[in-house]
Length: 545
Picture 1 (tube, rainbow, N blue to C red):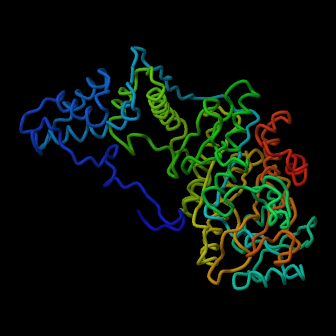
Picture 2 (cartoon, one colour):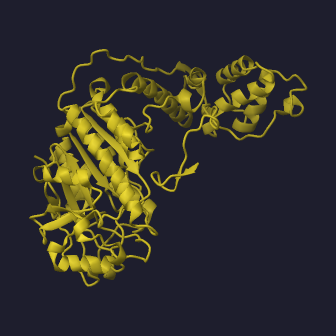
């Protein structure tokens, strides 16, 4: 575990010296041994019975018991065979279905059907392919440093420098962009966002101003009166992350907007045409309705990581421990999920592997977390024909944005990493001749206060984000950049926190249309759409060429 700001406060990395098998910390020796060594010459069956009693209450089914006996006996090699055999069995035990349930496993004699892994040599080209890449800035990005007024804005720039104080970015440092539809037509980007500014100027990037989670539109008077509902637990990282990715502010337990989109896309096609991938964990945004669409595939920054690499050299035995269909829904859920994960890992490894990219040198030269993630996204997109999905979504994440104590250098470093990685990604998509079919959108759980706390900034609400892609109608800002940044502004609720004027529903409406969601299904993807009366709800025609 190391302190790595690129990944947030801590980064737990794979270390072969630490991870040898499915980890267990059980400092225990079987009673049948008679002590710390097998002085009683206990048999494999006696040892397995002891483990079964301790860890699974005697619920181990006979087939798995027999297999664990074989594993124990096969592992009895080397200078300390009994210890090796015991550790080998324990390293397998967390993969036993009975370990994850409290009732009897009630296994059947029916063997689980596992698809044959057939890697197509020359798969037919995918037609009409589209992909959405979601770039999440974890920790709450200071997005009023990402998009700010320049000195040409006159009074608005004066308000900006007054309220931001020591964290205000000088106008001379901002990368100027035109904003003809805003109160001020001369805004600027953070000096680190060189590639994004270039994409904006060439028509491949747009910004969404003052966007955030909402239940319905409101003013600061309504907020203070409590007369209009707002998202729960405002300014809390965990809840607002869930709500931002769910795009259903009243219900932080709801699935994710991309997961719902996938369910709808598959239903419209009457077959599975949608696949979701995460290059960083299991995020809320990819969660669909249970049992409707296949769960998202989770990869690492290094690509498809096999079970053998992270867990055990005994993948075949672990699969065998789960080969029988269970009558228990709990045991069956675990076994089927594990078996499917093993299958998908082999399948993805066979298709994607270490696919070479035209811009590998660009990504490798950066060697940052977000660059590595977008490199893997690029590989998956390149192998889209073999993956046979016409719609892909990808989750990427970069942490470290909770800048309470250092809003300057930290933000510059993080935005530089994002901008550089996007430069490589755009060039790779152009090389693949797929740039017009890919859209990347940024997001964060909330913005940061306009006012400084003396060292950095604190938690706020509405913020600014970008959307890029070959089909994006770029060179424009969607929504309204605040015309009053002072404490007296109609959107200011104190401490430099602004109420969003654009709900995330407004952005996802246009994205979902572009992705192929029909109008009659839009309420399934963004349930709150009707709450906003069409105000700042953007259509595909507004957002895309």
